[in-house]
Length: 154
Figure 1 (tube, one colour):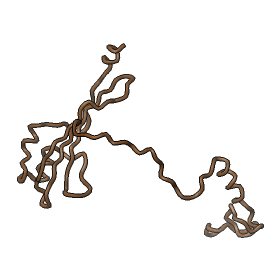
Figure 2 (figure 1 turned 180 degrees about the horizontal axis):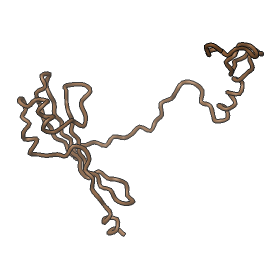
Figure 3 (figure 1 turned 60 degrees about the horizontal axis):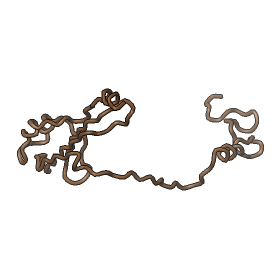
Figure 4 (figure 1 turned 45 degrees about the vertical axis):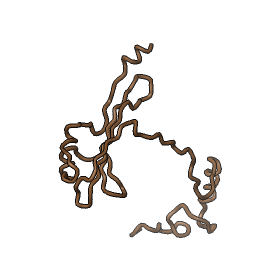
């Protein structure tokens, strides 16, 4: 059985494929942002605060027929730039540098009432009254048999 599952395994590369020879062309203090983009393409992600930083993320996933997908290799290249757009640092991270992050299972409470299905249905029953009783109306007329409002020329 294990041989059958292993025979159905495929590896799928995702993201930016790491190329060491391309990274050697990036020189700290000399290479510009435009040159990095020509060498590596658009980044996978960019920093939202702090110094301008680009991240190139690549991973290799292993798919097995009935097993969940598993990440078997991951690389992140971090390239920081100064205000003039020149490279100030280049760092590489692997899966060993990663940290597991626990997803919070808590819910954010919302204001207001929490109505069940039948409460929602029954709460709307009183909203459709005839205009003769002075309640809310579900029609577009004034009084009984009047001209519809909101329709010019009628």
